[in-house]
Length: 195
Image (cartoon, rainbow, N blue to C red):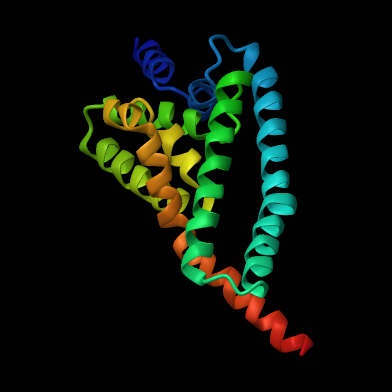
């Protein structure tokens, strides 16, 4: 009798593997177990290609634009406005491609699904964890990844959805404030190195 009660307890507790599998299914948006590997390969490859494009093409192009404009004598304020608007345009392109292709390129839709699942819990620890994680991800995305990532993370919020253009452009200006100065400092460093 005691043995059967212990078996019931072990069956009712989820194993680490099943927790991981359920989290992966929610993150990837897979309806059934068989689609987890297929979706993870598709999303992983797409997200990797986006990162490669950002790091090896977009960031050097932004640095080249800032350097070229500064070399031409353009005021740093104008450079900041111009590069912020270019960043907003690139963010809208990421959002468009994410929706058009139907693949979570930024991994933010998956993060939003997992965070909403955490917020649904009744445990105060889960809710606190969800709020802390959301805050950290938003700060990281605002200053590092870009406005498209924040928008895709928060797009279920009706205010964000309704004011999408203002939201993305505003965050683009916030993100580009430190990056413009970093690019300008890099340009000044290169200029002093070669002169």
